Length: 123
Ligand SMILES: [Zn+2]
Ligand SMILES: [Zn+2]
Image (tube, rainbow, N blue to C red; front, side, top):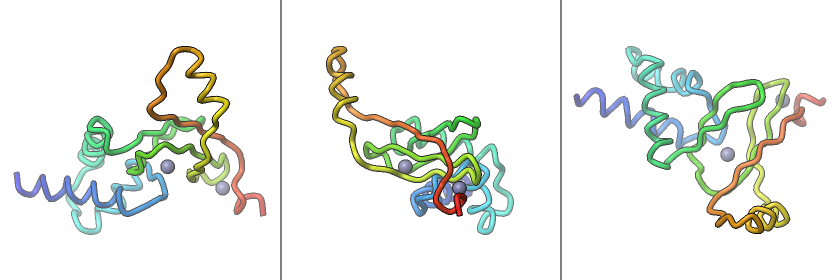
């Protein structure tokens, strides 16, 4: 039981330590150095728990890859079709928010994902 909570903490700390929006298998690679016996299923389950608790964001890209983000503040994402990288972009979109409010919504968070080619891949 103790071993499991240590694995759980390792998964949580790994996600909180990066801004790279890792997939479950990227987090798996990060924690495997310390916990060689951890399974990908355990990593995925712990990431899903963080999402269920509202402590992580789960992002599905246009290519179907699923990424996790410990930053739950309102922000949007840029997805690169070439390297698969996901980066943050912060400005709110007041016109879009207003359009949602005009539909009677109380907006509590938002998430948009642009896809394209990042600066590095364009070089
Ligand atoms: Zn790229
Ligand atoms: Zn993010």
